[in-house]
Length: 479
Ligand SMILES: *[C@@H]1O[C@H](CO)[C@@H](O)[C@H](O)[C@H]1NC(C)=O
Ligand SMILES: *[C@@H]1O[C@H](CO)[C@@H](O)[C@H](O)[C@H]1NC(C)=O
Ligand SMILES: [Mn+2]
Image 1 (spheres, helix red, strand yellow):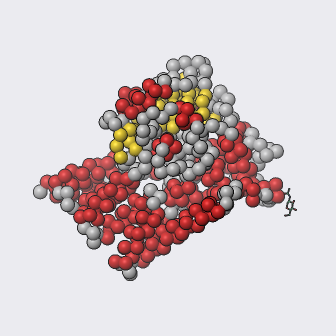
Image 2 (cartoon, protein in one colour):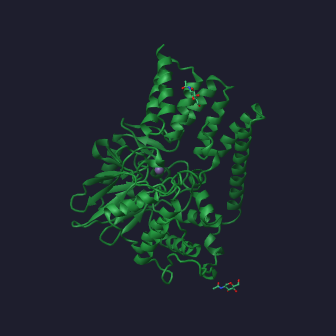
Image 3 (cartoon, helix red, strand yellow):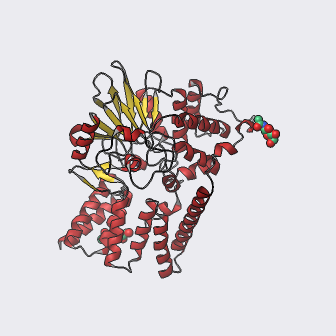
């Protein structure tokens, strides 16, 4: 009887309260308990897999879908779920195989056929891209642009660069223009992208900065295309300036449908205050993620495919980690799959690429902390989870006090773990319009380097829902 009760409870959390993160977590908990009592129920595995997908635990989602299929290899939903997990992980070939199975078993299922075709298209496109890449050294989009010759039509009344340069006046006009849901002229967008690529490519992979005794810096976590919440940060904490420096810790784009506005605003401030406005790469500043989670679709909708290519080139030059006063290390994801990584190793990372499947560059963008000592397999299916002992050893070896990372939504907008040695900050409130979480930013003062947390909640945005530009395979892939 008990497992029936738990199953019903899980079902209840899942389908009637599914607007908040904690409800997915409750659903996962009850399905987990139900599975302890009845470990051969494919439906429980499959439904928990969906809850894991929603909470971005793609590794666990994949494992559960695989389990469901081991129990019942004729369970069609299991193939769908496994395909969706693989898509989310950017493993398109593996996903294609499962869609193939579904189409074979259900030849009249239109939805399955559509997904199969869509996935097939991506696999072919990837193969094509690989073929060109190995043919010749990949040429930059910049070489095929003729920005000088792009004309700004008389009808355009929006912000323009001043002699090709970003100014404070331009930035203020740009933020208001974007707020009114208007588009920056493509010529200006291209100019900014070319300039910021040039600027970022001169930076090392590990940035070192000094915050003076009397100064402070503001550190923000994921913003994920939530432009109106970004404006709210500037409202609450002041515009970036030489005396109000910022660090944005990756995942600027994807999910939220104002990613173009977020990234162009951040790039604008980077150009305006190169030494007082810092940007680090997140796991979403990558081609695979952008293809699935909306940024590529959004840039194509608002501008062109070619401009997305240029964004991709710029993202590859974003630095990976930043060290404050030789004491606090900041990165998007976290620490490493192996002990012994030094700051010197990080400096030497050749970052101008899509992140590899393993190694320090992958870990910096993807790993998560865990409460127990040691390391375990990542819930996401990429990199690892690292315990307090791993953090302690890393800090000791590199003579650091603590790390700040982002990458995970937290109910309070931040979380202190590993006895204060590992801090998470997340700056997208009510993430995806449905997580109900607060967001936060951190003040760090040069005098004591103690993190001071400031929480904030979501502000209204125009009626464009998150994920509208995302790949249809992810939008519909949740059956
Ligand atoms: C599993 O999810 C499906 C919807 O995909 C739902 O109809 C079913 O009732 C769920 N089963 C359990 C036991 O929660
Ligand atoms: C603009 O385009 C014309 C025709 O394609 C070309 O002859 C000219 O050199 C271009 N001007 C610049 C500044 O690139
Ligand atoms: Mn992330």
